[in-house]
Image (cartoon, rainbow, N blue to C red):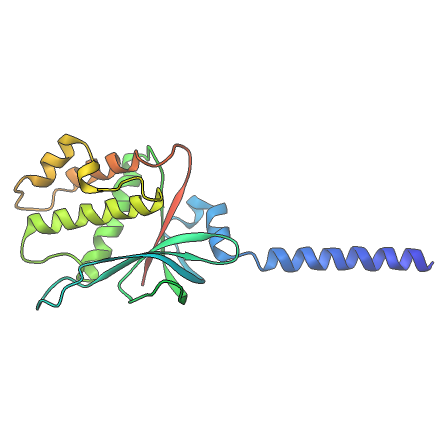
Length: 206
């Protein structure tokens, strides 16, 4: 009788431990378990900031809003974040924002979705140069390249100059209006740097 009770208590205790462990699983890990479910969805995560890259650092009047691209890490996993909030490496942060997934050889509609979402985000945050269209285009592509560089752990050491010659010609050309097709082409070229069949993630922080 005593052994039977002890066995039942042990089973209950084991189940309770498993429940606590799975219950404590991070939101980041949950996102990565269900990439297409979370793509484009709003999430809330917490973690420690790592690998910070800053764009648009300038004291000039009417300069674009500074951007912070960084990794946030919890006890289980990590994810990239693009934000206009000032962050410091090693600080603990709570992040709310929209998830985007990146993968090599995405369909054209998926690439257009990435470009549109990041484009809207940068425009809403005033994070692109407003005076010159060409400079805005180059800044946009540089940000896309930096994101993929971070996701690939530094494989694009010189992001914009690492893309194909044809894409570079498009960047250097004078265009009077935003041409989404050329940005899609460049983004597709950059996505090919990602290892095949692996998903990568970015949160656009509110």
